[in-house]
Length: 161
Ligand SMILES: CC(C)(COP(=O)(O)OP(=O)(O)OC[C@H]1O[C@@H](n2cnc3c(N)ncnc32)[C@H](O)[C@@H]1OP(=O)(O)O)[C@@H](O)C(=O)NCCC(=O)NCCS
Image (cartoon, rainbow, N blue to C red; front, side):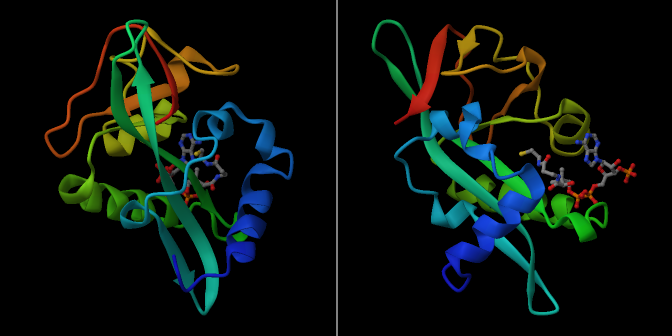
């Protein structure tokens, strides 16, 4: 995303999620982390930013101190005026293809299983004992193995690495 103005990405995220998005639990999980460049992409259409996906290095911190690295997917955001045109699916598919070769750990996200399960194989099967540093719906805490990296299923807090 080096050739995209960071302000354009921020503007798109405001439009997709609302300007109060910073209070969301997802922002606390990745606090202080920089996005993973190899897994973060922008979709340009007619010279305009149409969508963006960012991924973040996070970890599952077990009570015994063991940390298992994970990559948090999201936000995935498509400009409201071009939503439902396949851009979100394109961004996710592109990221997953890169993750199959580049990701150093399994993937997790907070999202709608009706979308991320249906199209991309994310489920809440492994995440029942996980905890997050803020409010969330259990059914929306999703994860997926990738690039040979499996998922921890034990109790643990998800937070920055
Ligand atoms: C969610 C989002 C990324 C999807 O991207 P998009 O380009 O609009 O959607 P796509 O064209 O790729 O996919 C469309 C399909 O997904 C379905 N879909 C889209 N959002 C959905 C959701 N939240 N839940 C269930 N299904 C959804 C549509 O019904 C459509 O299905 P169909 O083809 O059977 O009609 C986009 O709408 C968006 O930015 N929304 C606001 C921000 C957000 O909620 N982001 C996700 C949380 S990280």
